[in-house]
Image 1: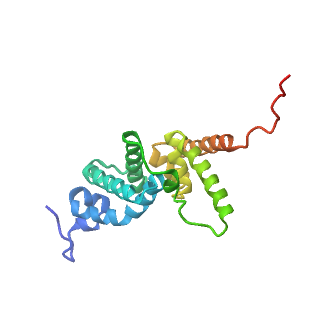
Image 2 (image 1 turned 60 degrees about the vertical axis):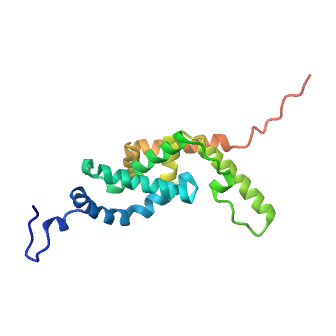
Image 3 (image 1 turned 180 degrees about the vertical axis):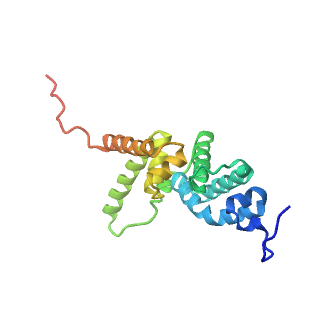
Length: 195
């Protein structure tokens, strides 16, 4: 039973939207409106397919709605919980099926540049980088996306990935080191001559 305040508005209305959503699924719409765009951009940066990103984003919010009653505020933003669900949904997608979308489509390289030679060079550079990022371990890959696509702080990245801020920073550092090594030009030392 809900009590009314002096203005005749239920007390539950003034509670945190997350708390309201726990007892009133209709209140979940407010959370969806607030976070759907951010979660979609995160998923889209990983999936690189608009339609599939929309489907996975919908799955994220359906899962959140199903489990909202078990959500416990641990002093982190609610969005961290949603990002964690999104990380798991993206990982599940990659585990369950291989994408048949070409790398160019996944990287969004469809926009032409003025100079065709520049376009070829940029395409090749992006292709190389994305190949390298796609080969990163899942946690490093997710940390890189959260940092550079979503512009999250180390605290937020840690919360999303279930790690401390220091561990999130270490994931980024290791990912960058790995990318630098992988993307560094081949050794400049000449090959030994056959004798």
